[in-house]
Image (cartoon, rainbow, N blue to C red; front, side):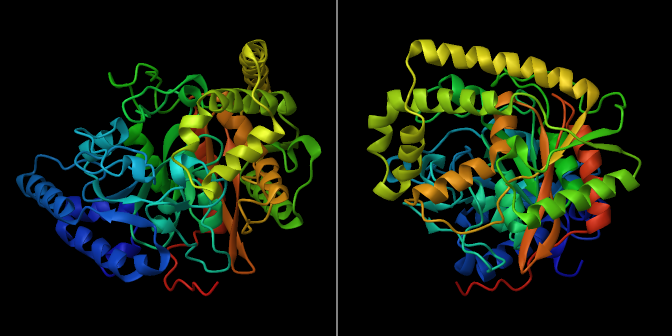
Length: 467
């Protein structure tokens, strides 16, 4: 294979299983690509070079023996700095956890390894995932967007978005609690899957402490890839129950065919949408209509209620723990959460409990809406990608409101796939497709239609980082 780092995960795994290349050659090519472009992009924080080579040799032995090397045989993947990889510190980007070395892999890392994939490095994230749409950490500095037209790759899984977009890895493993795999996908021109709550086993303990309610139900781990087919491969490996996470649901990966009806929502809650983003929604709606989907403009229910519930639960829990969290942050990295709590001050117990009830009622209404419209087509963010000063309150509000459909879907726990649709003025743009609970397959199928119409745009072969 020429330029192995340029190949899709599906092509890599197929070539390794057929003996057309070796897992060792794949890993060496990606380690060389990291050496070439990471000094410019700063997405990979730590290379797992020797361990990756050893694991590649193990995969090659399995291939030679004919015992089966897995559906992701030899596929390299990177892992966000807040997901455990055995033997490597899970730093969360801050000095306090610089020596926090886990003894075991987190469940999604373990499942990808079992499918034959090979972790090649950790990737950058904002301190403790608190940072809006930037990827800057105390330990590792700033990650740059490989397209070069803006600085930020999006957040908070920006390291994996930039690494995947630039060919340093075939797959990235990040997490999303309000758009954190989908925003980097849009900013970097790749695809991402935010799964249903309970679909993929996770372990989000920090320093051995279990998370509180909002941090239990909002964040989900999910893959970033350059093609929708690769997302599907990764999803097939990641989905399923695990004793380490009692929340996981034994739902089948595919379900019965649903009516091909799509609610198009270009401007959620009517708060405004950039014309270029609206145009991508229109193009995507036309593509789905041409593929046989019934496309109707319709807004999902109770968006304002869902957004208020999300903000209440987040700020109430952060407010209680903020003094201890704030001590781990710089003024800059604390600013995003401080602005959020200033806009929506932490609620009292009565307000907090009311927010849990509002969320539950909204889930019921969304389930009814999904009976009429199994899919929702909308923006990842209503704003065109832009660089923002984290201390700029107006810019922070633009980012938050722009991502309101991501926020709502994270609050409710439904699946979504972000997929690129164009490059405009040198910057990728895209959309997301949202489905009913545990029907990631319907999202992926619609995303494949969009990809077949619009193509793929990465890896970026010659990053231009002149800003």
